[in-house]
Image (cartoon, rainbow, N blue to C red; front, side, top):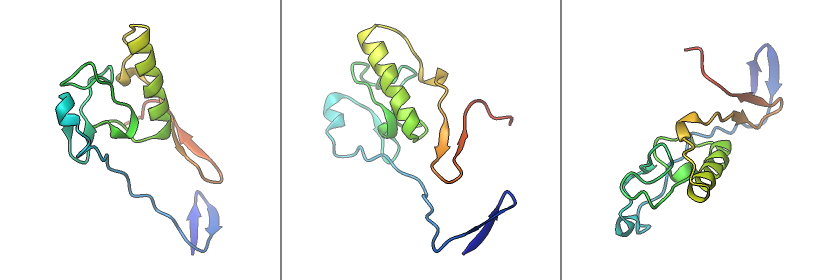
Length: 116
């Protein structure tokens, strides 16, 4: 297979396409903890990463509904939860600036607000 990207030719034997992930939170007993979730989307959280139905429960990363499923996002959310739960701060998920990275050669990344 041969493709042209940005004026550069790339020749390869195969192409791997990742088409996305879905949260697998069903049958985990979340109902017994009063944690609301959407099937295939994840735990519903507020801007402090707390469950909207049980604020004593925090959720981080790919198991959260309506949060970008990025490795860097999970790490930043974990920092946010530690800061909010242990230091009694109010860091917000909406204020996180997290890069989106493609681990390719050459590497590709974006961060910040889109022009659109």
